[in-house]
Image (cartoon, rainbow, N blue to C red):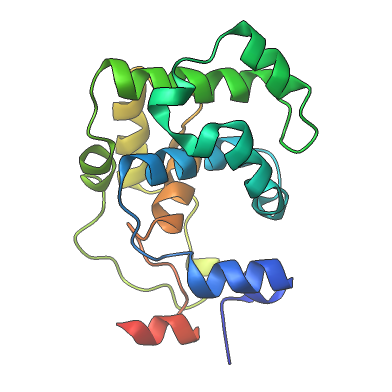
Length: 180
């Protein structure tokens, strides 16, 4: 079975590639989780975040924005002491801030994020054809920033779009590309 080259590097990646990456994902909590994890991944390897995902889910109360929005200074210190997650204060603060933005502005996160999904996009032939940034991810990042979200630039937004199926970047030779 042929998959995207990155999906063959570890069993964790293979499972993620085969069952999650590029699959349409909807719902505020699920998208808030992915948004947060993609922000935590910035500057790190995705495998680090993937392996820490259960700890992230426990630490951030299954990424329920209503619950995370209530986090205060003691919660930040608890998170900074949690070796199971990435202990980066800026990313932790952004995750809490973004939960508050979702709750306080009553953002329909699903509709907002999916509004940037391109209607059509040509499947990449090779991994070299997969972009890191697109016009849509730039527009998404700009709109999220305008609405007060933090730590979500165009590259992070594009990774979010890939992970949640807003774009399908499985290369042409990947068995997942046969789903079309």
